[in-house]
Length: 266
Length: 266
Image 1 (cartoon, each protein chain N blue to C red):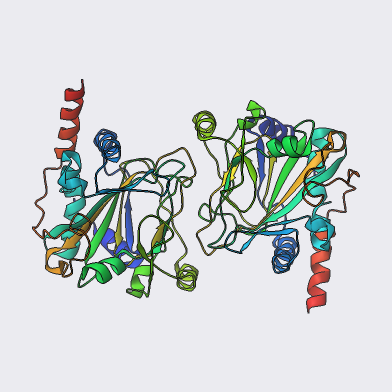
Image 2: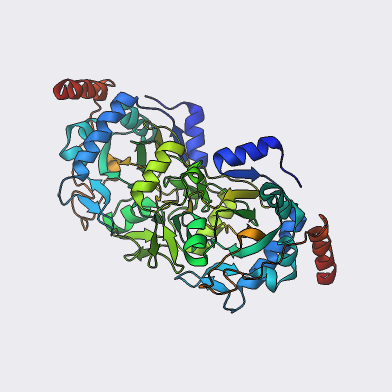
């Protein structure tokens, strides 16, 4: 998959691109069920909310076939290679649960702030890709962006160790207010299978989910190989140290996996 | 103001009515500024979040001229008298802040559950009216309703004293999931001056507000005089004991107040 000149211009200006229904319901159903299986396991890569509900599962592409295929999918890897003009590797991979009733806040932050401070990533030349595993609605804790905030570079942040179970470099209220005055807030909603690509410096957050609707999203962080990290403070299953360029799979690989999976289950 | 037969049927079926832009920006600006003044005072009727930000101010119609006028406004009192077919009095009056960044959750609940259990209100013949003082957006902690849930009567509830600074009779997750399976969730959004009327048994909640946008809403609870409360457990400024029927003011009374206020300020 390649982005059009209009899409490239929009990404440059707004800091994100929304691609509704990029994956079929069959492809996504397989991932959704595999994700539930992963959350049910007791492994170190699965972080939980203070309530015990799953919050995020790291590195599923290293231990789950379906997520391994997604991590090499040409609909995701292709546009990022196009944008950066070079091969990419997987810097981080997580499946955020935002569980029904229990899903907690992700405070306002820039991802590149963490990649720079904790991982020594030289430049914000890594792309976040969100793949919706459930329908994302206005009410079930959607991702909120401040459009154009990526144009402000990497902003001062404080390390919040208290608000949730997961430490995060977060931005202060004065900064958020100033950026929102300029860019507003958008919260793209859409069916499972939709994809959001956003710049490492785009300021984002998501509110708690108080509804019975789960809101699982897979996040791939694809980094330009020449921009690999230089500091190894975080666990290797959180900030990967394997900089091998990703070779995309065939476009039909995930659909084929889903078909095999259904046949096995039948 | 009178409701049309279609509006009465919709209220009966869905449990709520949304009336966008019922008040003008001039009328609402006066209320919004008066509300900020009330939140800035240190009086017992003003409850605060655990963070210290304002959460709700009770009984402002008893100590503030602007909110006294709103509490007798024919656009609010008229439809409720029409619906109940008798005079009404003010059972409760609050200005909920849902402050920027700090506004905390209101858990899933039915208001009549509290009025029945705590106040001995005989029947769910009291109407909630929400008047938006700020724009209510999808992102700044909108009121969420489960349409048609009022048809299930008064549901079992537990008294939640821990989640927020304010005790509330809340519904369990199984009940919410069942009701949402049937009715879904709506979160009406609209400009300041919009009005929502909803049944005392309609299940509702609102999520925290993590944005820089404040989301103040005034809630009037108008009770049929013949349905007055019989138990006086809560403070009289929370559950009023004055059952005198409300005599509506003129339709232009709030606009006239706003004009006088502007002249005084000039």
